[in-house]
Length: 220
Image (spheres, rainbow, N blue to C red):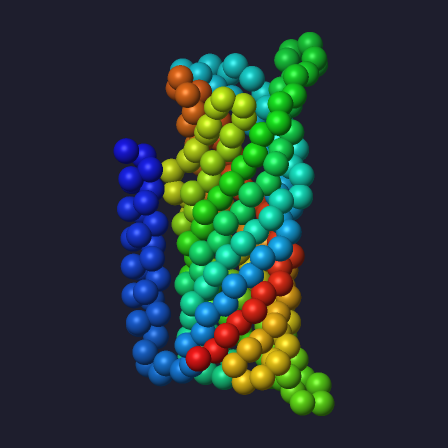
């Protein structure tokens, strides 16, 4: 039931994104584009409290390895410098989860965290630079909804769809009028939420990452 509710929330986010783009008709639609990207992600480590029926049963610390991010987006240029897009991205990273008891003795287990995000981004492209004006820096940001799941051996913890936001900065290189290669950095973060697991166990947490990505944009 929770997965169905989360899927519905993601669908509502997608509809809201479409409505937002439609409301910008006054800017007049320009070229439509699609793009794909991938790269490395570095989630921030965090400490939390694992509870059962409101009582503390553990104090896990999440220590993340470098993970990966993959994504696709479709958007439109409203002006030569301003565009909006709808983006889907997937993030995954392994983690060592350590629990320390009151005597400061610890036990560790391998786990991982994954996230499916649906975002609406606004991008500002600066004017072209270089001899042929084919190098274009850009800045942007986005908001959306994210489903996050954390797994340890034999146990999965997931949260209802969380609100998320991101900041984007990069540079594109136009190979020709249709194809642009780009590289960018992103800071991505969700709101804090409750992650529910088996037997009523739960903990509070959020996902925060820094991503280094490369991609290709094709303009129709």
